[in-house]
Image 1 (spheres, rainbow, N blue to C red):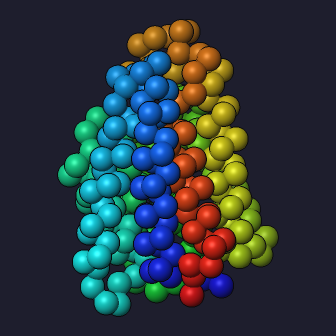
Image 2 (cartoon, rainbow, N blue to C red):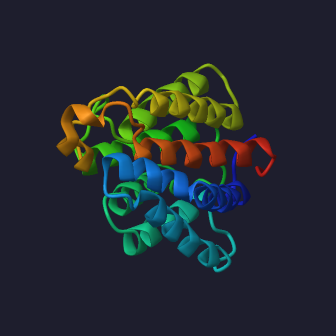
Length: 215
């Protein structure tokens, strides 16, 4: 069963809800090793997307929703998060452009393009203690699931679970990118806030898929 426009809209609504719910947590995580604005920025960006969802024209595809998120985040979210997540959603949109429904391979391609966009924009690698440390295991798990015959919903579940493991694994790392890198060894012992917000977004995507918001 593929994932259509209804799923994509539900993903964004659930993502906005969970980011609002965890706003303070993300602020705290970012305050420990960054400038403390990640939760505020992510909440503001996704809240700005919500009213625009009602204006999507008939016949829109999942890629149109992803593009809407990208342009809104880029225009409303400051700091590093806006350009990074904006690029991720834009590249994900481009990877599935024109597809009315995403199968497992489409989900894997979307996530891979999003991750590659983040890497290209942020110049970070796995182990740098950034959101890439959540995205890369998510992409690997999605690709493995899709290649193994999983459904689109199962592929997203695998990605979300792997992202959670990846985010947890950032805690002992010493940051090599971003503001956290200024702390050197003192950055160890803290979870990267971008990796954690990645978990919340992919979890929202997986829950939306599991709840049957698909074609």
